[in-house]
Length: 291
Image (tube, rainbow, N blue to C red; front, top):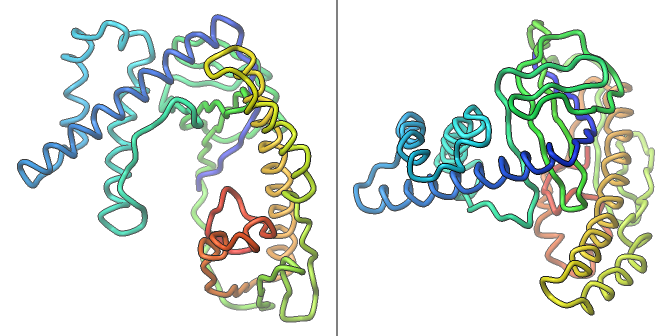
């Protein structure tokens, strides 16, 4: 069974530069492969396979020497990610793949050659990066995904395989139903009510203040980038509060019950309502269930 552990990492200045180059190369190759796949499908009726995308790399590296700077495994991983994106689209689990943008969350995946030893995470070409480890797994490390969020923080999601089989699902035991609301975030079938913390409303004034400061900065200036980071940090704070609340609530429901039934509610439609959008405790407008 696979388990993921997310840690905050603190790369040095030279490592930040190399990671920035790697983010850019992976983003460029993903957009290039996506555009080429779309054009090929429009003209021939067939897209590009995973191997077809990987076979593009040798010629592209000769044409663009900067593609040799990041680890080759990260570029090869693009083919797998793009193939999975198209598979999810054709099976109607997701929308058509979008082009990656520089201003959004950046991420690269290292499928091999990674090692977590103590407080340091070893990555190919990047070297040892200081990692704030909250708990050290004893399982086998399979891959590491390094991400940069808009607020400027770096994280590493480490995927481990504990070698155990996935637990068999069972409908035996205590059952409970969960209904989502506005005044109360969740009401269970046994009458328990969980209040809606409304984190966005709590930080709304501070967010408006930072956004006003951002709007007054000259576009493209260093001061505007500093103001943008301050806005992103407020959004990050709201997201973390929501994640903490949802994690604790879901953990409590799972520990106390064996069967959980939730309503089939389209949260995305509720988010489109301006009077309801700021009242919901969801993550980035996701249409996930309340727990």
